[in-house]
Image 1 (cartoon, rainbow, N blue to C red):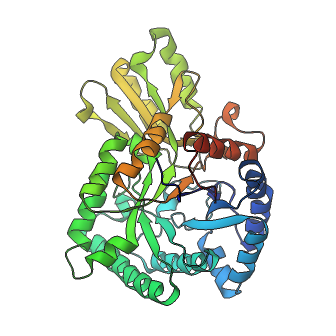
Image 2: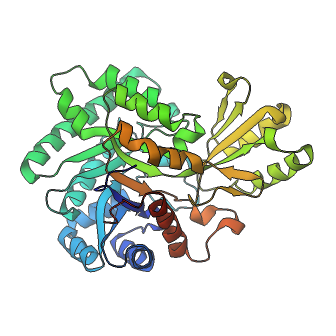
Length: 395
């Protein structure tokens, strides 16, 4: 289980604003009621997301100290940031745009450094901070060695800046690369190979491991078929630190457990998860020959392919973050057990202290799963985690 000094929060990308004013408005509307329900007598952690334009606005208008005071007055403590989405995460269609700019581009480095400056100003004195980031990019935008070299150069530049930043401020800020299905790095092995082939083996390996870590998203690992025991041990054996765990569940359907008459109903229910805003990468796994798994970049493509496959031998898992307090809904399941496994095993393989509920898809869930009150739904998720891990420090 997580150590007693671990921090639990939720990621505010679920109700993010498009500028500083709307960010404050949404935090007041949602984060404050969550805190009142989950942690009425102590500060509550939140994982802040700001689009690049808002991050630039906060810095240019010198609002960091003002923002810190506003958060302190409401008992909200930013201990981590989500530096993955660059632009408007709630525009009508996001899909592949969330992977731009890539780590080969200067804009990604600049945005991340802005997040570092903001997070430093919001952290308690001497506290460690984490910023999750994308796994370099989507393959079509990043499919050659030159691009990986450019990404490695930007990351090494970032590590050098973070090392000097810690010496100047006393804050250790680490950037945590988040593997995601279909991306250039979508498994633990991909991340490990990148560190080994492009980053480590220099005279600053200790600094690299300190300031560049892994963001372990439980949903992403579940979609890729990686067990929590294996993935956590793999990072430990490779000497890589997990900087942040994102507690999230995927949608799963094991057709082999269904009666023939239920299969059509399950497919109909899965069809309700098709939506236009986000990409929902989907794995079809042969239950008898797991090596024959096929990853589709979006759910509609996988559902179409099922027509020509032996469906009774297949398990489908899709990258659609559903509330983590759900175990099953109708004929479908959530990969909730993976979240429980992660929380149970994490302290055996990692000294990670930052945990973040990251169900950003509340607003695009099928209507029967949506919360009438978003703050209440988020509070349910937070309380579910606290029920699993009573030792969590709510601040």
